[in-house]
Image 1 (cartoon, chains in turn yellow, orange, cyan):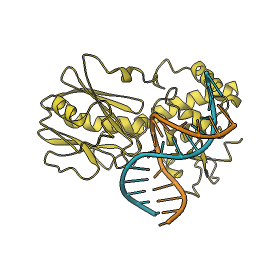
Image 2 (tube, chains in turn yellow, orange, red; image 1 turned 180 degrees about the horizontal axis):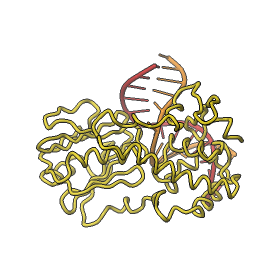
Image 3 (cartoon, chains in turn red, orange, brown; image 1 turned 90 degrees about the vertical axis):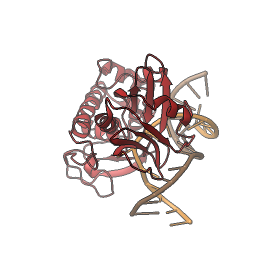
Length: 274
DNA sequence: CCAATTGTTATTTA
DNA sequence: ATAAATAACAATTG
C-alpha cells in the first residue's frame, strides 16, 4: 500500500507511540530476506535497551534513530505496514519484526516480504539514506529538472517515467495516475513528446498531489487503525480507480484501466488524450 | 486453476 | 553501450 504519504503515516504511527520510550524487547522471525544490511540478531542486540530518539521519512523510506548512533531503516515494499499493538501482543504469521516498549508493541508486518529492514551504527545517517533523490516538495525539484529528465527518458511512456524513484521519489502507482489525471496527460504519451507547457504542468501537479496526499493521508491526528486512506475526497481519482467501470469525477465519463509500463494504470479518456 | 496486487531489481531485448 | 521491457520475488485474495 505504501507510497509517499502512507509511509509518512506509518512513521508517525510508530513515532507517536514510542518516541522517547525505551525498547525493552525485540522480537523477530529472522526471515533473512527482509534483513538486508545486517542479520536480525544484530538488530536485536543493537536496539534492546535503547530509546527511540527521532524519525524521518524520505521517499518511500523511513529512518528511526535509537540512542545516539543506532539507525533502523525500513522500506515497506508493496504490502508492508507498521502497526501499534499492546505490549503483550503475540506476533502473527506475517509480523516479522516487533519492538516492545513498556506500553506498546511496534509491529512491522509484510505478507509478501518485498520490504526490507536495515540497520546502521554510526554518528550520522547511513550512506544509502543520503543517496535518496531530493524530495518533490524541495526547492531542488524544479521545472527544469523535470524537463531534462523527460528528455533523457524520451522513449518511455510518461507513466513509467513517473515511477522512477531516482527523479520522482515517493511516487507510486496511484499517485502517478493521480498526477497524470490532474495534468490531463495520457499515461501512454512518450516522455519526450510532452510540450514545454505540459512538462511544467506535470511538475506542478507532482507537487500538488504530494502536498495533498501528505495533508490528507499523513496529516490526520489519529494514527491507530483503520484510519489510513479512509477520508480521501471523492474529487480525487483515488476513490474511483480501483475497479472496472469507475466514473471520472471531473468528466463523468467512464475510466479506463490498462497495463502501462508493467503496472495497472487508470485514466479518464475524456480529459487525457493520446 | 487463473488473474491480480499502491514496489524494486535483475535479466533480457531492442 | 544504453535504455526500455519483462521476469522474478512471495503470499494472499477474488
